[in-house]
Length: 440
Image 1: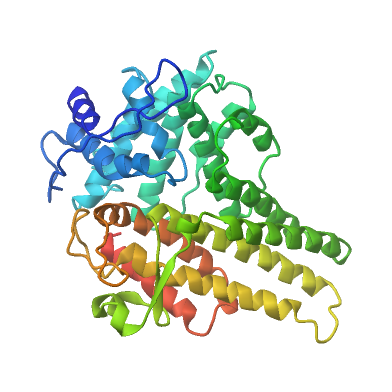
Image 2 (image 1 turned 60 degrees about the vertical axis):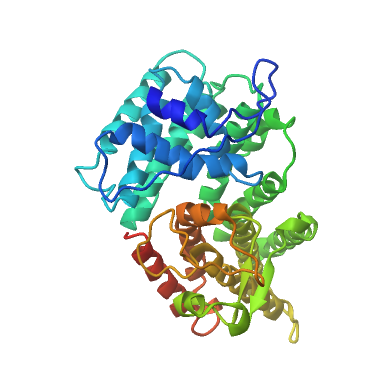
């Protein structure tokens, strides 16, 4: 582990954690990008760690808009003791990703990641059985074990259940969390919240009201657009659950709540940073033929500031779609006057939001239609005019694009007949394309 840690240190510096004893630096020290092997190298453990931090964590740490916990991982990992559950948990994720990019199967019984995963589970249990409070490394270990499950789910096209996330939430709610006194600790806590809220929204599960109580300890952290959006999504998740037992008597009250949440989402979108507003390019003169042939819905696509802002906007779109679906469900229980355009307008907005998510596909996938290297810069991505694709996008789109996009497209498929004619088939085609690109 020392070799990998030393190599990564040349690339990553510890982030600003708000503590006088911790570094305030948030810079990256550049290092060369090494080749991705076609077969696993002999020193696969250290190589996997360097691969993971270089291609996955470094870009997340550099971005100011990466949602979740990855930006806080490296500082905690460098301080973690040899007995910390974070060590084997990181090894499990790093090895699984390296295997996937080296054309091995992380789901295989021969996977080199599996022993690390089980070691991580044992180490977490050992900490949970003790009477000690839980520090950042244990929470992050549980999130990394969840990430490992997510990788296996993505590579094996199976549901991602998320038991480790629910376990981390239970620890916090039961008061076993150490005081949150640094930026890294705040980001870790908010990372747990992000995963819980996202899971609840996708699975139509309620979110415990205690979630807002234990995240009040992060009130000193900046109220970023991502955090503001997640606070609204938490309520959308609970709104969905309320709609499951909808009756004619409760429809009017729930309709009022849904309309209020929809307006909050609209307001969030209206005041998001100007740099987040995507650019749109149209037609064959602006979009290369290879991109059009690989997958272009209608005749345009969008270009975003980063893969993370693109996903945040798609999460916004999915959240608004779910809110509008609740509105339509409520209206079905009420006697809507003839000529009332509310249902028609709600359906039109759902379809527009679905179109917008589909328009982001080329930004995620470029013209890829088959397996390519994670560092392949021959991939074409949509650009404005003669502008070149930023170097970082080649890496982040390959590393995160498939997993991000699969989640959002899967949500659109649930709309079924609410989609435009032919749109469901197009989305299914892009899901199949992702499987080919990532050999999953």
